[in-house]
Length: 73
Image 1 (cartoon, rainbow, N blue to C red):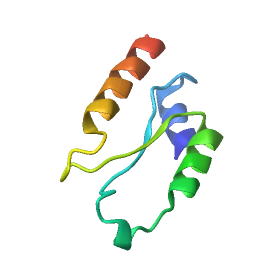
Image 2: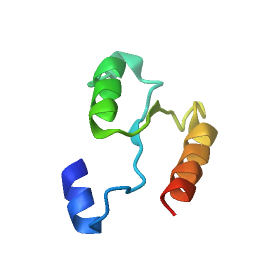
Image 3: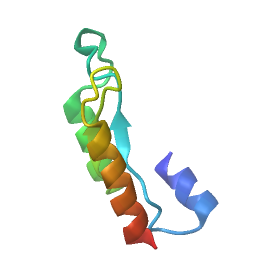
Image 4: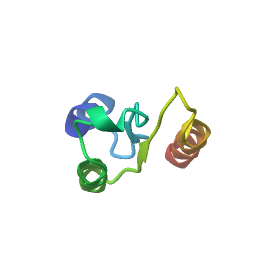
């Protein structure tokens, strides 16, 4: 997926964050934190887990998005 995004954008420094959502549903998890973190490292991007239901890391995610956009500019 990362390669497709870069190919479409034609730019290596595309702002990208890998996000695992609905972290409040731990019992229904399909991807482990470790798997998400490993893929983010492979893609050279940050990894965050969030939950809109209990507002876990939502503000931090938006702050990171802004940081990534400023870095790419």
